[in-house]
Image (cartoon, rainbow, N blue to C red; front, side, top):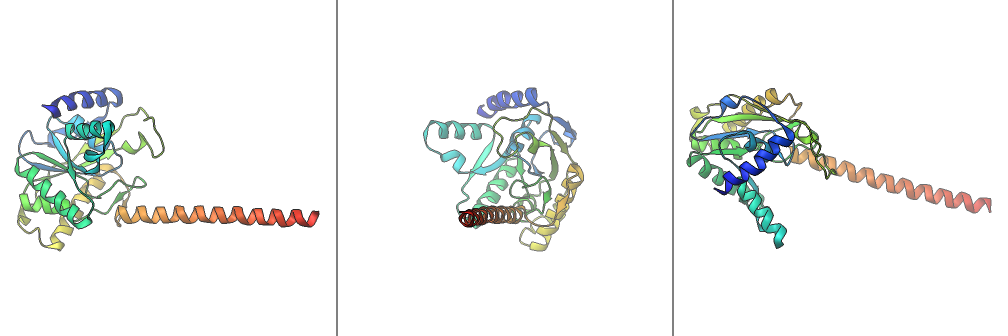
Length: 255
């Protein structure tokens, strides 16, 4: 009931304000389990996709969204629960991954839709990054559920980093045909099979989204970008200090 009310209010508001276009809705089954594997461009991806579907989609969310103190924390927790987000403690990388996988398996075994971002984090620059072989493939192979590739289009342009007020524009959602990996059912312990399944899904997402594909993990790319930004800031500071020293030295000579 809570989900239905939140979907009606939030989903209706999103569709009214942003008017997202959708292709491939017929590929979402009317009933039964499925895994929706999507690229990840924006925080809003987890809201736009459920907004255009008739069925509930459960995504994994950081446990911190559900445990923050105060009134704001309670409202945030209620909001995320209402839109179908599932809390997972990510304090330990390996433990967090296992918790997410088990949560996904439980959702699918209940006959529901499970949403997952194979990249593991948002793209830092709009390109499509290498999928992590753990979550998506393991849930698919453990359950035998079909994997439906999804491409979010232009959602990163609605609220770029540093922007408080979202830009009113039409994002898009492209939903591909279900992929059947039942031939690998029960082989979720084979890392080569996991890699193959993940790469096949990422290829389909790339075709749907039109994104440039980068064969590295998005987490590594984010570290590289952060390191480059830090180095650039340090270089700028050093250049400013050097300019100040030169100006002081020049001023001293003139006097």
